[in-house]
Length: 600
Ligand code: F6R
Image 1 (cartoon, helix red, strand yellow):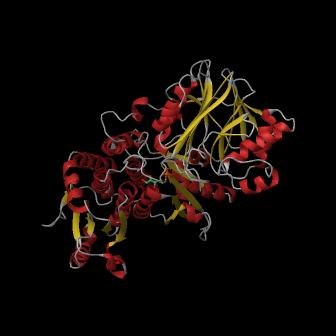
Image 2 (cartoon, rainbow, N blue to C red; image 1 turned 30 degrees about the vertical axis):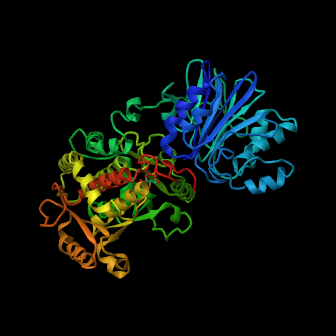
């Protein structure tokens, strides 16, 4: 979703801003822009489309050492050059970029801006025009900015340039992520450390409702009431090579291939000196005090949560509910007496999940966040964090973060079971190692999945995924992967559920991908496959060694029955990848989607 960068220093800002925006491309966007300030004034360049399109219109002869930049994912107003950020006040004095959504922008327009000829359809423009109005009333820019912030309802990360304030960027945030990066003779602003790793690895976290004055020598953080806040920087532990594609054509394939390595990193990260996989004592205590766990997540992370419920109930015997964050916040179930909330979020920034976190914190409940991004909002605001150790995930379609989530959930459940004196038959270190090896085998068998994709999906407009028990949840994730990057309409179903309605959609040649990795339901899922085949479907069975039958299209290596999702998802990720590739879709940046969904 939208991304912000800013630079103030001694070098030419344009290239630093454009490179920064390129690093944010993975978040998903539909237009982009930069504004740079020099002694002649503020120069704005913005364009619909990709950063490559923006680069074409940037005037290289303009040199400036201060600037801000933005990638926009449209919410208010269509993707267009006019609605792209930066936005300027009518006089051109103030220039602003914004992430988030201003919920009361219509009301602010009516109250303050009836006489202002707005130039765009965005909620953002209201902010910059308000700063102008308050500045016209005689307020210093910082005060005008602060007065504006006090009126805003909703989420924002903001960077503001004042043509008349030499070499200053005014920054503020509420609910949307924003960092300030520190350097020698320069400072930067970024939605994500990745954008500015090119110049620094020292960052300062910003908190909601803070105003930050950034010059090339200094960063001053203040609360909305003006009180100055001191905060030490942290080192972003990101390796610049982690965010390069290397020899891969797409990040998604790189990230699929990284999954066995991620499993091994997770084993290392969670292994105790005694060689067992475990988590912090405090987390175990929180789990053991809870009478019910509430897992909150969205999309792929929600699918991982569905598997987490299986682990937490089967291994640790703790009753667990899994909820889609965007529904939970408005339709809260009756909670148990001692709930513990578990937030699963790759980015740690998803607004829907954060809305639940804010709500349950107000109610006084405890939360654990499982995230891939240390220091992310959901991590900071929860009581405990479990890291995924998957490394930066750049492709919009989540792959390695999903398998990391599943593995960490298994480790959490296993550790809780152990701490409760449960009788564990599962040697998780060994079984995760076996799963990592099996993942490697599948990653080495890519051609097979390219062929399966050609055989089953080359002309189809839809596809069904079926499974029972654990396989059903993996099917849901397989369907999400396929639809989000290839735009083939895909749905996952519990094998037994099709005949209650959806089987009506089966026609001659409809592809049905069936997973058969669970012994307890092997016969029944095969019965479901027969039902759809009898109605003309083209079934593709992916089974597991030991459970295979003659017509199975692919047999994955044998792994522990609870850990099959780590392995059975890989064929589905690869099928989605090849389907997108064969259809000339933008694999890493599918239409309409954003990596980090920072609006509700
Ligand atoms: C799909 C995908 C999304 C995310 C969802 C939640 O491939 O990546 O469905 O899983 O937007 O994002 P996080 O995990 O960052 O909270």
